[in-house]
Image (cartoon, rainbow, N blue to C red; front, side, top):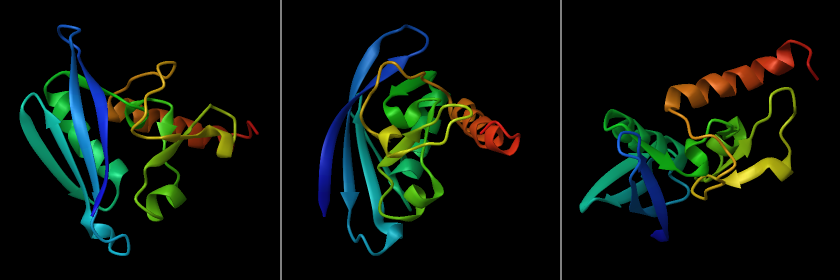
Length: 144
């Protein structure tokens, strides 16, 4: 089953050049989480990813881009955005929270992973995970 097609931008960290990519999201069987598929057409080639949710498929594509010194420009690739465990376990995980250190995320902080908010900070996978862990630890240290 075809879900939707999305146009995204990819930034070369070397040249500063921007490239367009088309992402096609498929959800062949919403009850079977092993069937989430994402196809990316970029620079005349198609890359296919199959994962349990779209966030994990997006991570796989970002790993490829990082090896090529490129950065995906969408909310799912921003330092401050990360899905909650509930978002990851329910549905296809197309949304995440904008996380602010020391502040609990709310429904007002939910963003689509494939949209682009230019006020957020592009990050590597490692930087995004590090920020997410810092955000989590800000609650353990009594900042709330």
